[in-house]
Length: 324
Image (cartoon, rainbow, N blue to C red; front, side, top):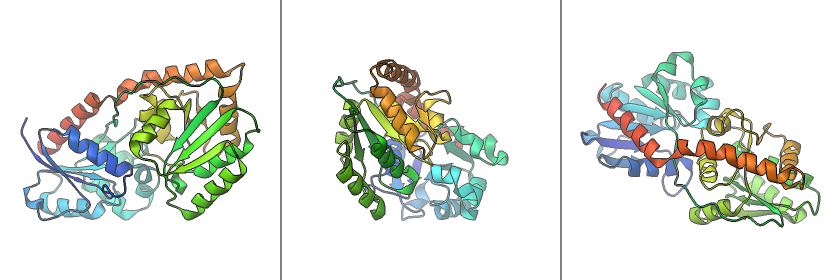
């Protein structure tokens, strides 16, 4: 393998600690054997040495994509499409559309992502599933059902649907909800505080370190994921590879990871449907069988998210970009 200089352009760096940064940092580790660095914008003082660019986000990295293309053409230029790219920006934003055209190849992070692309770009797109380590499935209490939702409070993650579902749960139903995430939108933070004050079974924990978040996922009976727009949420993989089944909104970004026939889906924004699923998972009649079925479906998908598979896919992509 030829050692290459690879630059990853990420709109967010370590200070943001969001999905873009986590992906960039993990890819830097997985591309061992190449010289990889992460920047917010390109070119920078080391740009003259670069062989390959992996740009996260068609719109937000558009300036760097244009600068690379002006110097190198398509050679070495790959663009990774996020949820806001696929399901919002490429439909109307000229910068995002231009990134699609300039790139030599495109990556989506779940198997339904390619169908969101304009047909003219389908041939240069590939799926690279993100990965996570397999973690021990921890024993769960039988006294109640504990659900956890993980994601900073912003509109795309639709935290209001979780809060509305919490309000619909009867007192004493035996379903408890932990909500993890910083209030990027102050109004949503206030809504979380109000829900917590009115619903003893709902707790907003704010921002929690990643290691502690993983432990909470392992201990939970269910992970809830309400997103209205998603490119391929890493937290879903973390749950599936921890033996914790998922309840998720029926959007392509979730179904592309969980499978289109997954039994734990609810319509986006439908708090009643989410509350009904939570109660069904707690029901003495149906709960055990339903949770076991969801666990089985998640276990069948978990091998897709092995680090070795993501590493191999990334190395193939970098080599293909260089050998254009």
